[in-house]
Length: 208
Image 1 (tube, helix red, strand yellow):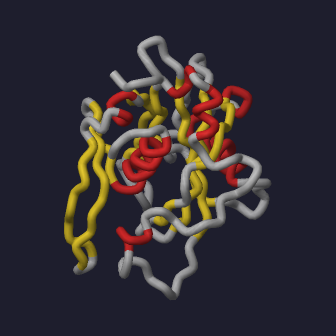
Image 2: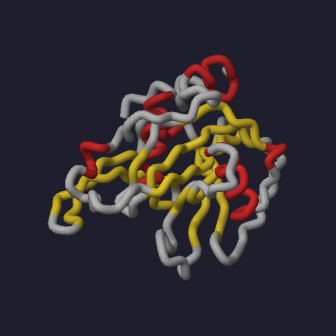
């Protein structure tokens, strides 16, 4: 078991993240890992995802989705609800809530944003702002079959204890790339989603 359940300590929880009232503008925390792998001629696309923590009797859980196999990008991968920031979105928080409704039909009133994680750059050209939130445990997810094959939860405690988290190396575009991988039950969570989970764990005090 982890040393504490963060949702049981709201003040500590909020203090762990970047404040909601200021959109993070600093550099991505993973720049060293993607050095030389991004095309400098193409501007990054701004995006936001929802890192939803669900209070459960056995300890907090994290909501994740599995993308459909027919998508052009990230097909079949485990991810957070989210997507690119549209011109009409009032903020990255609005984007995360809108995308969560579009992907898994969870209403915004069931979601309490708590703060931001650090910006993250993906190899597919996105600058992602993860919005951490408390999700009411009575939510019911209804995946949009055009985008999401499944919605499920994984426990937070193993992440905070550093269990099942590995830093893996592989060749990508002629470069040796390192990326994070987090395994929970039948789920292999890797790449950007696993990296953002590592960032979440570190901000909550995990020694990852």
